[in-house]
Image 1 (cartoon, helix red, strand yellow):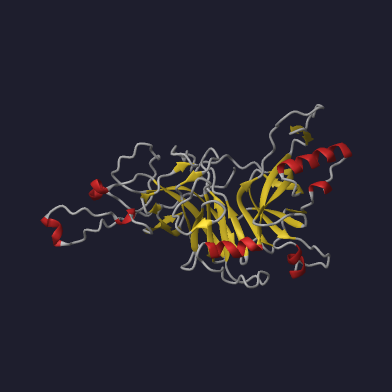
Image 2 (tube, rainbow, N blue to C red):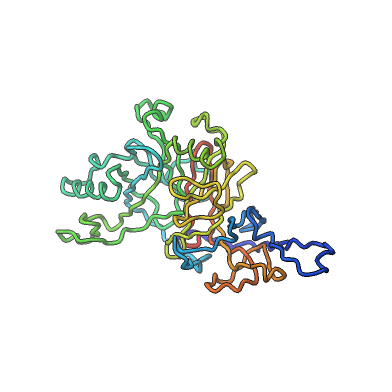
Length: 403
């Protein structure tokens, strides 16, 4: 990843009321109370890079959710926050798969567009490159031999769904990709007729960059200056990328399962009005899933609902990511937003209430032996995105990304 970095604004530290207050009964003897920040649905406001975020702490019915490496109790590596390699831009010959989230059989006919992630509203701007997804049997290369190998690669990597060629895509820097239904009937516009054939909502992908492929497997013939990729010789400046297409069924069903009801404006998914959704996953410095992360958005309002996936659907009861590290914001207002993830740094128990600090961010390294003297939040990573009406924004927070 080669994201651009901005300096973090000073963190806002907020004290947590232990619950004793000025009650004179406290002087009569020891009173065991539970710190407010150890209760379910406790929230505090933090400031990251000048943005205010209301964070609902990762606390469930059993207390603070300890961070973990996937489904294990091993601690994730979170030491790369604020580090990034210099941006080295180059044009890459990119081949992209498109995964389907929800019930769907084909992605052939979807368009994939890519822009450089400059933080602007990209909806009405010309992309750096755009291409149409083809079924694996329709993918073409320069000759019959390469075509056969590329189709085999498509079947293997894209699970027989399809692949899109994006020549000259901007590599080595943060990008934004959009997956959208194409002009299926050839009338010059994308309308209801096209959406009836391919019922997908617009999906925007943030938090990724394109890089040159690495050699894997063996090729029967020597590839020369090219790179061997699972039996196919590809140009050295090739890259592979996976985007996601969200079905209209998933867009409508997941909010109901999560207790939201409906996303505002979903009665007409082509009018460009209403709210949207944000979803993604959290990875550590080694690209491994992180459990126990609470995710917050600076663009959320009182109608926005955060949920965390437990299997195929988000659970309304969860307050942090599970082993698959997947989250979702439903009914999110359109516009720019800073999305950030937080974990418990150290956990305070009832024996250390006087020393418990429930608010703010702690920069000390996450430790495996918790002292139990304080409870603080640690920033895992964050990134700026833009949410569009009637669409889903995908943001995978990885490698300690910051805006």
